[in-house]
Length: 264
Ligand SMILES: [Zn+2]
Image (cartoon, rainbow, N blue to C red):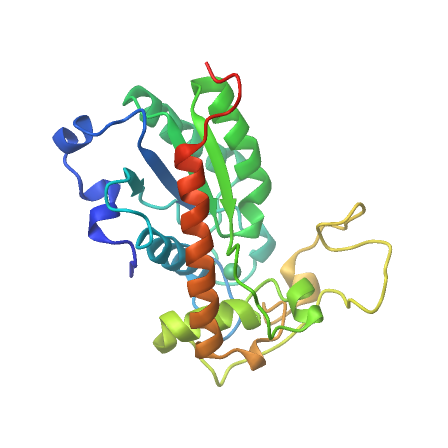
């Protein structure tokens, strides 16, 4: 898999003796969680995994070299059963996903690390990541943080409809990959579906509201796209990646320095 993580920030490129010599109580480790799942006719299965790596890799280039911070190898397989029925989607169950995160947390705790960030780029993992952040804190005393998606990106040219309901293989994800891996974007294969319309104030929403309905992609978006990629450009993708990378770097530094009140 392609990577934008600098070699000097790759945890798995260290030897165990180098890990042993780290200031482990201080070191911030970032565990990416992503997915391998259908992204319409035009984007690759690895879209969420590539975007996670791209944003994290670019962010880490803004972190001072003397700040001990490493990216762990990603959990590429996520809870993607909303996309079951599309060949190529590789999903794990909620219990499998949580067990892997828990066991990695146990390994890090045993090795003497205290600070872990769960950086998630796939919506289907979000609720599990929230659960596991608290569980790693409770079970192992790890100072655990969560980080989602692309904070700081302005998405300034994106319509309100696309911003709200363009959440899978739409303009934003397509723009990011047109910038980062244009060879993997099939620009002659765009399709578009919207799960809901912003101008229609339905009582029940697909997600993020007080009252939601559970959905499967095949029910509402046969091609697998939720959103409209047609307005995506590489230039916008580059600009948004740079904006997000700056913000993510600031957030990672805040996590590195974070001391909660009454911390034992
Ligand atoms: Zn995606």
